[in-house]
Amino acid sequence: MTLTEMHEVVKNIRAGDDSMLKEIADQVDELNQLVKSKDITEAEYKELMSDLEHQQFIDAECKDLEGKAALAQLFDWAKTGASIIL
Amino acid sequence: MRLITSLILITMLSGCALFKSGYDAATMAKFDTNEYLLAGRVSATAELGLNYCSHPDIVRYYANDIWLTAKELRLYSSNRNENKEVIELTEALYKIAEGVGKKYMTYSLTENDVPSAGYCKLKMKSLVSNGAKIQEAIGDKEL
Image (cartoon, rainbow over all chains, first blue to last red; front, top):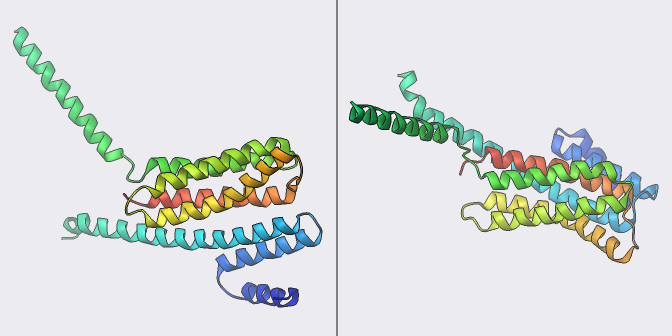
């Protein structure tokens, strides 16, 4: 992927609705700026880029767990709360 | 009279014990508190280390501590059954922590390849937020 193509991908993500993707796109942009200004080395850039992939995984997985926890609470309440409704 | 007093006292004491165990059961955490603690420790250590990113000789101790804690967390969670999601989360956190730990360890051993302040800041920020996210997810998860 060329730098121009990468800019295009980042631009498209920013135009979308996914806040998680937008956050990642901002971080990619920040990393590009830092490597361009030589504030980080190329090896560091590669490592930080691969961290973003782990971060994206953590975000998605936490969201999933949050949903499962909310559902479990709802079902718990439904079981104990029946007497209140009836 | 003494016998009656003793009986009353025994009844009162066991009543207190019952009340105490009932209270403990009601307020007991329903998640794994060790996982919760270790994930929080990764986040807190990274937050402190973030302040010293321009001093690699200081931040290397924080980096080593983060690496060790993330490894403890990964090993601890991996040996429990029915814990698939947390195992995957701690594995991902460990991969982030391993990078910073190894980099500062290499620097400590060789005095070459000084990690840049920019690298340190981004790594620590990532560990602060990811550690906190995982801690929250563990707190929400019932055993």
